[in-house]
Image 1 (cartoon, rainbow, N blue to C red):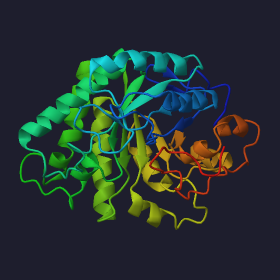
Image 2: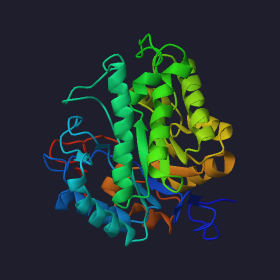
Image 3: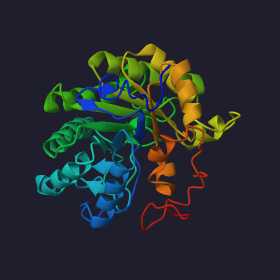
Image 4: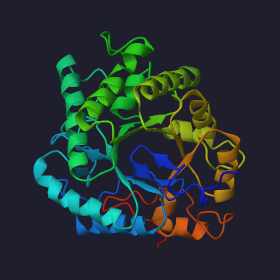
Length: 341
């Protein structure tokens, strides 16, 4: 039987490309809001990651990071848009690695000059520039010592909307049928792989469905994931937007709410699938681990409340995270739990 902390699998079965994970628990990407106005790392932000690295997670995925100078959309976002930033990132990744924890940089794009773009916003040339910029951001991440990158294609942001038939009204090769709507994701993956090589991990975070049309959304996610898996993507994290969360909370336990979407994708692809969304109790996650093809579990808000939570779980599989999902942690001056730690 597989477990979240099965010592027989540590550093051999639990391998994702070039990384060895101590366990199956991943810190999911979170907007921290603690970088300075130029997107540079601050001591406050670095301390957050030092605490995470010592808290027992098997892998850290950073908060969404912008990679072109004009594409920041949230205050306090970290940036990796020019080489002058890399020295700080090199020290940052060394610090995380010193705790034995690998770290992935999430590349996030939402639009230009603070505007949230729709799929119809960019010209054909803009799209080609965005694809190229993803590759440049990934190359900088590799130079900085990150173990890989994650493409943010969830939560209703720019790339997520391309997959949605409702939101994507383009009439060119990036709109219409699903083969066209998924094209930008595949081009971004190919660009990153070409720029970083085969020994650098590439993840994607993607919605398991679409609030406007659940069946169409499930099928679109399935198509995109199967195509990415065929190309060699290293892991797929299945999530959802606010509307999907409301619907999924109807499950009796209100835990691991996207399990059905993730389980379907895990049956369809031969790459690790990560389940995110209200993962709160190890015993619930381990049941999913042993009754589906899902291999990894991601969480974030519970780690704001209890930074040492994963270490605590090693000794108590029935302990439920104290996080109550109130979202009061999303504050203008930084993403912190109002109840502690």
